Image (cartoon, rainbow, N blue to C red; front, top):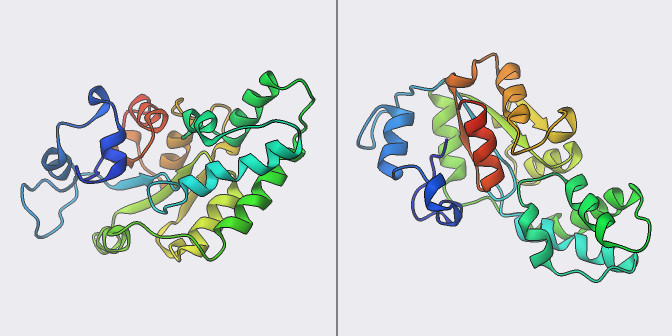
Amino acid sequence: TCALPISCPAYRRLPDRLRPAGPARCQRQLTGRRHEGNFRTLVLGIIFDCDGVLVDSERMSLASWLPVLARHGIPAVIAQIEPFIGKSDRAVLDHFRRLANVPLGDELLEERMAEYFRAARGNLRVFSGVLAVLEQLRAAGVRMAVASSGRPQKIHFNLEQARLTEFFAVVVSSVEVARGKPAPDLFLLAARRLGLAPEQCAVVEDSVFGVQAARSAGM
């Protein structure tokens, strides 16, 4: 479920039990080749997470919660939010609802989104190598989708800011499914919209919850 090079921070963050055997094996699984050269795919579609995979937005995404929570009387630090990487905004809000002595309404989701847009506009960076990989996959006829726990407006904002929208015929958000990651629902929906069976898809993820979801989906 992972095609990340061993130098990638996302690859290094995965626990040993969730890592592929190594980047060489990943490349063989995706291309059928041991060496770089002509790209011959064995899978027909690749589903990407967005934050932390395509764009370097994870830190800004986490930090955008802090001023919102502070305005509602909840002092928080990024370390309290990091365990929710890969999960939905609502999962974060529900967590602090349980901790807080004050009611927290759904309007915090909109406040947090506004904070993120202010911080990220003009500051999003595409990870090195992403554009070349997407162009190579497109040239090879591989169908590509984004499946993210983020809300739809945040996913589209990230792709537009990073100028990656043109590569993805399918964009799926966790608000469209009953269960978010680590359940497989999000990736299964993306595969259906690509017109592919789960076993015809590979997933590129940077969170444990995402890798678990991909494996549960049979990808």
